[in-house]
Image 1: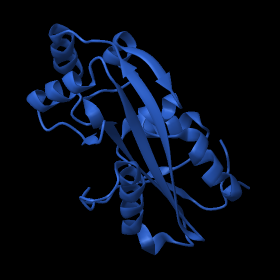
Image 2 (image 1 turned 90 degrees about the vertical axis):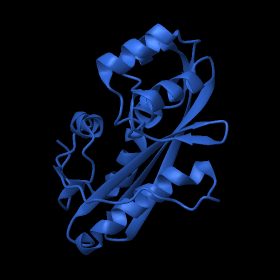
Image 3 (image 1 turned 30 degrees about the horizontal axis):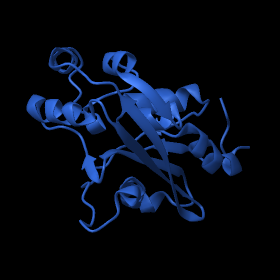
Length: 191
């Protein structure tokens, strides 16, 4: 484990983010606060994930100077359309059809609340799906229930294994946490 000068709070219920932080060698506790995920409608899609990550971090302002708080948010962008988490199977099916046969962006924003205040960052990866069959989409939705995932898919799950032809960028950004960027933000705080 990497020893930090202050306790680390991961403000995320995501099992994938928790797994990645453990595998990266960080000791942390999880604390989540309800936060709306609204953003200005005129905001450029490339700025949204970082904006939302900082908005989440702002809910923990009282920890500044006492702990480090790491927040994250991931969005999927097809052309200029942002795909968040699907509300139901019909919306998941619609999202996966939009991704089918196309390249899209996965943008994960992070924000570290530390002694210097808020330190936001983000990373972008490009993902190309082959043309997906309706039966494949239906199987994935039924078996994996992707309602907690931006764009209705997890790269590490079946649909990612069989449907993604190419990625450009960090695999971990697509999973929901650009570990290389997190490490750079936390490195100055390691004992």
